[in-house]
Image (cartoon, rainbow over all chains, first blue to last red; front, side, top):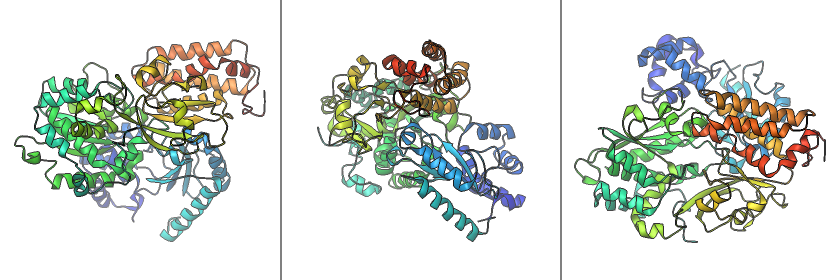
Length: 166
Length: 427
């Protein structure tokens, strides 16, 4: 997989066209964001997308700043979202956050120095029967404990090394 | 308790399997009626919206039916975001064809040509399955031109995904989101029935509402309305979570079980996970009031819930154990709304923030006597006039907690936590 950050202009246009049609802008934005090593759309991609859809940059940026799954600032390759809504909180989701903070050596909301992980909270992802829940990309990891979350992080780091992202 | 209508023992993801079990006979029955008779059937069933507002489905359909304009839309709201709610997830992943058939019947009734399945971004993992189901229906001629060979009945459904925003469960915010705009609520009027998606007349119903529609046509409105109570007919999905032994989704006949049955009944929650009595139960979602043990004998139907000052809402049942500090829990709920407020109107944007700050103050500092009254007054003031229903209901949990357990809040004024939670300052 080639990341948005290293694509040429032409490759970006091709990626934009493959990301979906103009009736589903939000899905297109999520699909493109998933191609970014920093989980964030750069200015050039936004401009090219605006051109493709014949809308202004502002129309796209106002969506990026509104929806919680879309980022406006560069983040890590893997954005670890720990559910902070009441049901997961009651099942001690806070403990998962504490373990991850210690394991990644960052605070909630920060990104690791190697730009691999960002740790943040999310609101309900609809898996309250299996909480506490972590969401990374489109994948849910259920019935989490601090220990399991750290194993997951190590596994993702290994994966990233094999893929050659550093 | 009659058999389940909504929950399947196993996922039905192949159209052939769905049809073999009687799928699409409901659409055939609907097509044998006129659109007006179809709406009458839904009205007679007494079905109310399952998304939270519990508005009469038949009346809603009638609004769109009578609205003037070509190219009407039928939109399925699959953007459940109320924490503790995952009933739509179960239906989407197990019974996509029930939802598609329900939407198709609705389209026939109101005269719609476009369908949109608006699915929350958090359920992107489900969208492949849904696109596949839509494809199967299209291939079999159950979506597209001349459905079931009925000339002139054209209807197709496209899947549109959101990107994470609780507010988009609100109808008009949802419409902005599905057009690829910021999901802020629109001013009303015009109402979606007259000017909704792309300014066309639009019917919006919840996943569970559409999923139950085929059943109404299979058994008939009379059989349907004979279950449940007079004002709350049929079954409802409830999702148990929090401090509970058997979390999961349960289908209940409205009026047939009490909150106590749900939490402690062996065929439901089976009691709390720590086997101690529950301190409270957050029924209906984050935007609903808390239910306390003295209210646990309330049967789950709209009339009884209303009389008890409660709300069935989305059907979320979050159980709070004895060790939960209500002030802390309310702060958590308010933080949810601070994050999810769309920011358009001041009472909601600023009110949620200020009330959260006051709760933090109460949890951290020694405050003057009377602080709880100020907190209550602030919450009431903020809940008075936000632009949409979600802002109004953001403070229900806090207000019900203060109303029913004022002592726990006033104790915190003196740095005492009766639950022994906040920083070791035990009561």
